[in-house]
Image (cartoon, rainbow, N blue to C red; front, side, top):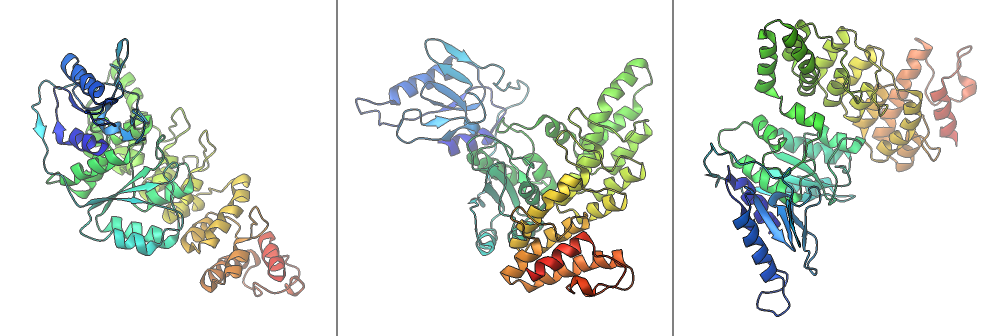
Length: 480
């Protein structure tokens, strides 16, 4: 029923009246059943109230159809709406949450969208899922996948698994990330979530899996849309199926041609006191949207309006931080040329460099490092545990980008072991050679043209040059 309600919510566009699904846990012919109450409640809501949505009525509650999911097969309260309160509750009084009910458009006629894509699927990740299994699942004729991940949208970050996801996304497969938790939303707070986004996976925010699958089927079934157009539609709230974060909602609504039109309109705005006040109010949001989408032309146009590029929103988001997180090297290069603060941190203490590293944006990381960006002492200390995690998964790409950011590859993790200890113990010669070559490159730069072998005893180092701290840890550890 949750799947049916979700699909109908996308198929029936411009609804003017309620469409309500209901059912029963116990057949209506049984003496003790919930069928009669559910049917009468659904008829009451459909006949007496203007709620122009596809809804689901169960156990005295009216849910938005694409927000409902089944949580119990034994109790009469079989359905819930985890991330949105009920639209209405029936008791002694009937309470309608008017602020949640979507408004009907009296100008538009009802459209029944019957072109729904059937080649979509649902993939639930689990710890240790083989990349070969994921590769087999993502093969044609599949056109779209809803991928259920852990917690706030996290998943395994094994290099081979990420490569399979990225390869599938590059050949046009649309992958939507939904959490398998009932409550909460997909975020990029953790490195694993950022890594999935870097592989081309689209955030499903707080959609249920049923709604995400229905939305994917609807969007992929629309004719004449490019792949980018489909991704933009998936990132928008079309039928009240998801809650967009305030900043992301602004960015999503200002993508592409809409953003360009908004900037062009500002350029044409007549100069007056009111116009200047309006510009001052709109420019920060437009600039953040441009940085989010990598729109260099829009940023340059905003700069022509006299807007500085060292903008900051109430939570400390800067243009550089946004562009670095999204991996837009062109925008990052432009901002660095304008002299923005390369080490500015937001309220969470996250720097542009750390966000670029988490997203595995090597080009952006190189630009930031060349401009003087550096990880904080705390970030460098915490890097040891992250490097050990990457080493245990033989994640060469992750190790390279952390090294590029200035992390010490000999930094021990929480258990005192370094990344090199872990790869040596695992018997992985390729990653071992990589770590040795990277650490050797650092040592060569510090010592000059003459460099001893990386693994020579401390007593054989040429005098008077002393070993670096990272070399000392590696050399001592290799004898341990």
